[in-house]
Image (tube, rainbow, N blue to C red; front, side, top):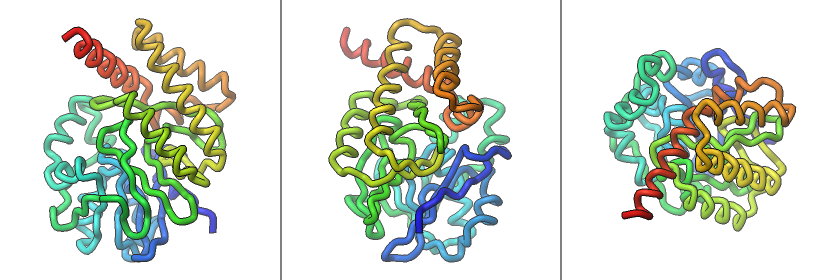
Length: 282
């Protein structure tokens, strides 16, 4: 059966955040879980009593915010996450402070409560988890990992950007604080080496044209970085990105804004480039 995303209807919108039920040798698993504000929708759409494992790409709130809530209601759940991200699930205070600085007063309405995951439920991943290959895919976040299933499906999280299916445009969402363009290029090469058959994207849907998608992701990330490097203002960057979406005939720019806020990518890339410049002149 072809894999399809479970649409979490984030803030009442279709095609923004999707999670995936994955059949594994150790029972059904859920890839990413979305934020706490989508938990009721998740519970309606997925038989959570059947889920034995939660596979997290990374700990950003649109992917993992509901993990603590999920474990509180299903205490037998095993939560698989990067070793770098694991401590922040058990003790999410630093993660929450960082997110509140970014989102301000809108935090609670958008993301809801951030509950800790008991340490005994957390499984730091190695090279495999529940029969899937696991490998680091930094760039979007230092702690990002992806999962490759036996049928060739790569559960990519945010490693390969935002692409609202069936559209072709790929937006390279790059929020602060730890964007890394060099690491992202290594991620692209690692994915190319593994030659996945399809890409299961959290934002949003399954892409079968893996090589074309990766090429567009590379191109758009380079374009975004060059715009910031050249001195574009935040407003100019946002306008240029919106024009890219419209030029690609993808329809509603709002889908991309909701899935990967453009202003955050400007901030994330600018922070990265400033840090690189400081190192170069030190």
